[in-house]
Image (cartoon, rainbow, N blue to C red; front, side):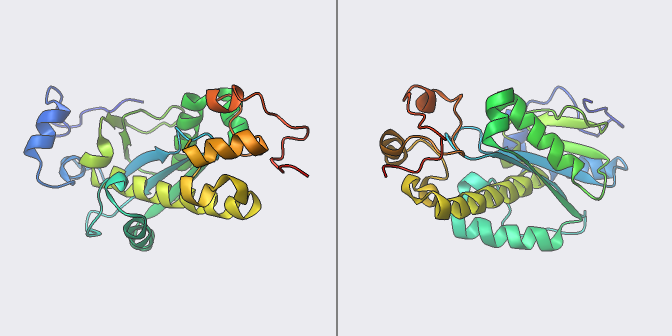
Amino acid sequence: MLFTVRCGRCLRTGVSTARRKREVPDLFRFERELWACGVRWVAGCDEVGVGPLAGPVVAAAVVMSPTVDVAGVRDSKTLTARQREELARRIEAAAVSIGVGVVDATEIDRMNVLRATLEAMRRAVSALHVKPDFLLVDARTVPGVAIPQRAIVDGDALSYSIAAASIVAKVRRDAMMRQWHEQYPQYGFDRNMGYGTREHLQALARFGPCPLHRRSFAPVRQLGLFPSGGNGGGPG
């Protein structure tokens, strides 16, 4: 469901994102407009992991109270790993509700990465134990949820709630990849997080893909290296 304007002030149409970015000195503009229109619970939703060759797409949905401001929240891509981890702890302690959705490599190969991304977002929203009255989503709208919503291009840089979701999603996915590194250390997942770095591509050429690899992605598929069992075990 696309967003519905509830009053004249509420997320006015006709004002470009670029203009908002110039005018807004903080990340609460979208949330304040919604709160001023009587919307109680606003959730931000974002995802991470669309581009990697291995691992899941992970999405997070975060509902924050209008009275809580976790200082330092901004687009996760502008933060160091240590900053993200500290902020994620503070967000999780302060949030009204957090939902996380995960779509693994097998599902990504079956449904394609765009559909997998939308499904991860739907799962994240569905996992919230407090149902939001409105969704702010980075660049997309989430299918299959009966909640008014708005897609905001560059939302993780323009909306506090979306930025919080981007941090939680990134930290959760990075933790998963570090855990999988212990099982598949030859790929360097603790460093590349599944992205197609030179080190990762060299490991793929030597060992073939493991179960975490997305076989529908060209760099994996074009290697033509699918050892029997596909477990990435490397040479005997």
